[in-house]
Image (cartoon, rainbow, N blue to C red; front, top):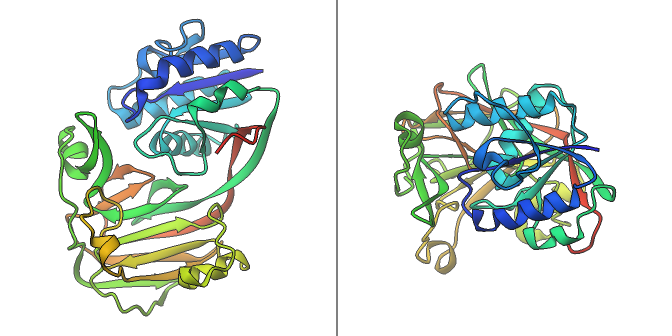
Length: 327
């Protein structure tokens, strides 16, 4: 078997990467392993075959470049070590390149809650590349105007910040500071995300909602969560029985942030949901200029007024070790 391995050099929880690399090297000793320079893999797996020289300095562009370099060797499995952000970048690059390689995510990022990052480092001792299980995960395809932005396997968020690591601590970071100035700057999430009148269309039909000034907008696939019809989840409970496996939510509080200070635990949080399924398009306009798009923790600048979302089922093939201990 040929295996591609890519580490995230700036992952929020990279303290275990030496151990992860050592364990992977041992488990893959009878297989051909490809990785990339320095902290992208070679530093942790020195015996692996190095590829991807000449990668650009920009992180997002470098990940795409390195993924394309790795798949030139036609690997049978792609392992990414990091968080949901790295997994989303890798999956997006694989999808756009038309390469249907199964992907396995090993947790090592700021957040590790998506469907791809399914293996905890301590469970790698049971990893056997010959004994894998496979399943398909859907995604939210996001466009800004006529431009493809990316895919979200966990959630797409409209806001001015994203969760990241600064000075060893997880905090909310500014989207604009990172993408326009290449700086990590802590920022308080804004609750003022709309400009004028917010408009939401589903298949070109205006949607009716009552939270006209939401503090955050989140769009998520629902298939992984398995709501099982629990009424407390509101309209989401129907996703267990219908093909509508995605939802858009308007919240009167910022839910994705650090240091909520009791806002979401001492008071009621109002949230409205609207379900949608394959082939349906949900588009939003009337957003503030200061907010942008965050897909699985990866920030993207909003450069057009309209942001559109489409649910795509069975979009990526996810590999997991065949063991009950994997989360």
